[in-house]
Image (cartoon, rainbow, N blue to C red; front, side):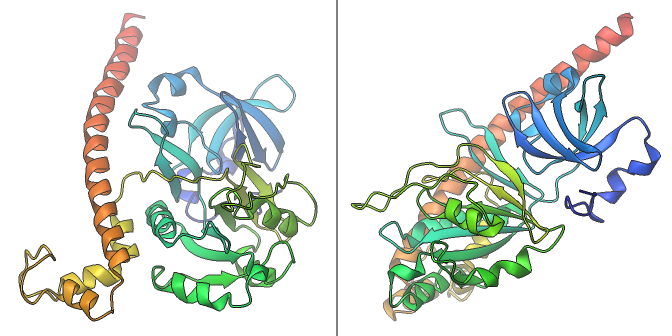
Length: 353
């Protein structure tokens, strides 16, 4: 594949000119293991590792290559092997808080144009989870599209679309059934050559079945969901960049039942724009939206114009975001201090030479 087929566009051009560098090549990370990266390039596929300097100076795993990244690598003596010397700036980045107690960003995928949020219309349907995903998708810089999968299970699937519309403002919502190969034509505008899409959603939502339909063969393992609660088992165990027959590229991601938000800024305001617009109409500028007179938010709730569950979800996510951002700022300060400590150590070693 040439660079354009791999997703190269004018965003990346200022950062690297392939024609001006005869010793290095540019490629895109398709799969990442603990220390090696499968990289697609116009010269073929390379298995590459990062330089020791990159690993040493990395503040955390988010500074290392991730699936979707454009990297500059230098081929080595081995056949189709190389060393990654640089990661180009990211056009978009879908992240979450890594599992565990340590405050650390886990990059799911980068340089994505559109993120398909796959939602199964079964017992696992959850509006609050959709809100949480939308915040992170918007934070990533990619465009969200909601796919309501398993529409064949319901005669009144339009009911679900209306429900999702109430929480997904100005977001395209598409009904489909991956199992029955219905409604997939609505995805074609997002899958043109050079476009990169990612699939996110809970285990059992039907992402693997959808991928098999899009690539035209049984590539991903598919498992049945549990009948009692519609929860699925993880069939995707790693993130991977997949080439589609239509010319686009797709990133599959393991199912995420719990999505711990990472660095919430504009995504919360965009996802809950209706509530934040109401807040500007309150009588008092510092209204807490509880028992104050002429509170537009409480009036909307009492008049049935705002779902109290959505209001509670907004307050909960607002508290989470404030707490999470505070922890991240403290951790970032410590990480930055450690980064400069490493840089100074490298400079001192050079000066001694």
